View 1 (cartoon, one colour):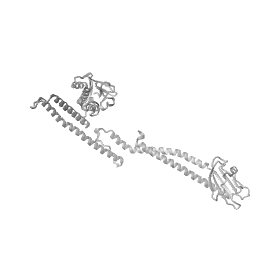
View 2 (cartoon, rainbow, N blue to C red):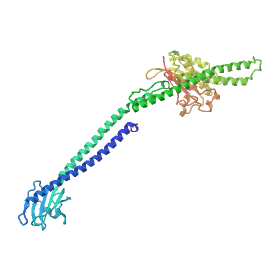
View 3 (cartoon, rainbow, N blue to C red):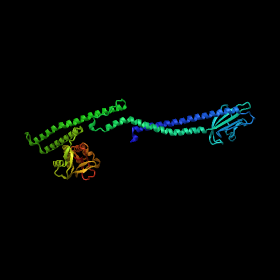
View 4 (cartoon, one colour):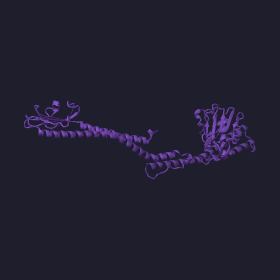
Length: 456
């Protein structure tokens, strides 16, 4: 899932943090720019006020009417304390006392922002100054519209609304690319390890020699693979050695039972019932040892299947003819027809025997075996089915039956003669021959195993 990847999270965090910083910086820039533009406007008003004071006539003279070149953007009203005009703009009469300064202010300029003057709906920046003159104090009010300030701030705001998202997207793209490039060796290591099979534990991931965190990860992964390879090798060797060493004592036990049952040693012959029980246990242990040895060799990749043409139908008929553990079970082989595959005859015989033994042990009265060829999607296939009319396998456990030492219920216990490894061995052999084995989910009476192998 993309949102759970490290690359996505780093990019999202970096992009979000960068966006927050840009927004804060933009707001600060707008505030600073507004302050600077307002200060500039105040300085302009102060300069104009100085010029007006220098040009104003004495009290009682005809007032000076100042030209307002900027239409209504500027307002000047210079009057005595009594309200006698000294210098005014043409729009000052409409303003009236709204722009008059507060009574009692000192000699410093008073700056304020006034909204809603009669001459315009815009805001005005108003300077009020008390001017000391020989003929008496006068009050000077100079006002200027803040349109230029607000227009400049609007342009800056629109620019930020365009630049901030674009800059964030650019940063996100760069961070996404950089993080992807940085994590590419990690993904390569993950992919190599994910593709390793049990018999590939001697493989090692490449170490680039940069000495960075990626190199240390690769070194750690190689050390772990080495430990796993050593542990797996020791386990396989132990199982193989133990299985091999157990064969000889089991064979001697079987021979001694046969001799003891005949009484040829001078001792009384062993009780037939006890002998049968002991022989069954010894045979079961022998089968278990053989199965363990097969799996150990298979895990160690010591037994690659032989590739030669095999008449699978002859092999099936021969193997099933030797399975006569229960006289009350009939094996129906009428559905067996010609099929030829490439593989190891000995291992394929083991598949047929394991499936046949399993079916006979769990059948009530009948086992049905079919074999034929069909045309698959890309190749011809041989399809072998072995079905019994026993208790069957629950649908949620059809995969578990292929696990090692699996017995699903009381009907599939050791007392029934199985080691719990037959189906696991069958799947191992079939898969190494390029085929598949599964339980037919549509078979309702008993269990039906389906083996598909590529034809020769």
